Amino acid sequence: METAGQVYPLKVALLYGSRPSGHCAAARAVAEFLPPGIIEPVMVDLSEVYPNFGPFVARTYLELLKKTPGLWDYVYDNDFVAFAAGAFREAILPFSSEKLADLLIKKNVRAVISTQAFSSLLMTKNPRLKRMPVFSVVTDFCAHSYWPQKGVAAYFVPEKATGLMLRDKGTPPEKIFITGIPIRKEFTCVQPEKQAVRKVLGLAPGLFTVLITGGSRGLGDLLPAALALKPLLGKIQAVVLCGNNRKLCRHAEKSYGGGKFIRFVDFTDSPAPYYAAADLVIGKPGGVTLAETMAMAKPFIIYSPLPGQEDRNSAFLGRHKLAETADSTRELEPLVRKYMASPGSLARASRALSEHARPHAARDVAAKIIEMLTAFKVPG
Image (tube, rainbow, N blue to C red; front, side, top):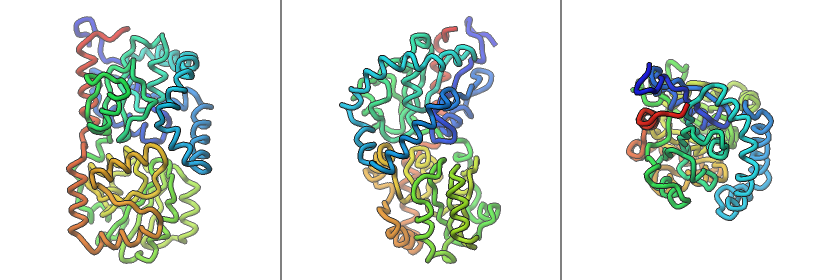
């Protein structure tokens, strides 16, 4: 198709850090709403473009969290550290982004949707990509100092406060759009009754159901959390989503010996049914996890947040009174008992999350990007 000299569909890259991850899930969510007659999505995993860099960053990050979590929290959103890193951005990134530029130009990509700060930085620092529109999607309820202020056509953020953080760091306000965090269609469909979903999943239809999640990577103290709820099993049933942490899944199954009222789930590409089956969710407050939980109006208990973005996501939840926090495994059982004994508390928590949910973020992000791309001729 050709319109006013513009040939469609346009190839648009969905650029994210690694798979699986919240960044990847958000990218896939936006891609689901891109009409094929206008946009041809091209998924680009940054860890495949730079195969050695991704594992190095992941290992470094996990080691910092394990040994010196306070250091990561300090580095995460420190303006002085970000300023010092400016020399790195200006001197190193233009060279390190050449491989990415080669790939995008070879694939005839005309625009990029980036769901990660480093991906956005790479795009904005390469002179060969200067005329390629970059749309950045923030997937946490905060915007740290490493999101680029210049070279981005539009920012899509979860809430007003996130947009203000970007403005304070120099992003023009007209480039900031409050949409929410993109989640996949399966979380926005009308869900069947909990009892029906439980039957399909092989769970007891009438038992109070707790979902424990460590995000796509299965991080956090998931096994201790499951063990903390052991005295309640039989009165409740628990499902633990282990992400791609297969080692944890195998270890947990051995530790529990195939317990009747608990299930450990290896990586699943369709987590929505498990959320639909749950009465209560316990987990790390990753941005996409929270967006999914809010879309399905499931009361949430913050447990084992990672320093940096998840601590700030926890602050967002606390500011709006959207979740309670278990600071240790000892606090999990009493909190679960509280919700079991008080359907009213469960319903109030569900309503509060529903009121803050933006389940159609992916659709709104896609619509705005299409509007902007079709309003002007994209450079060839």
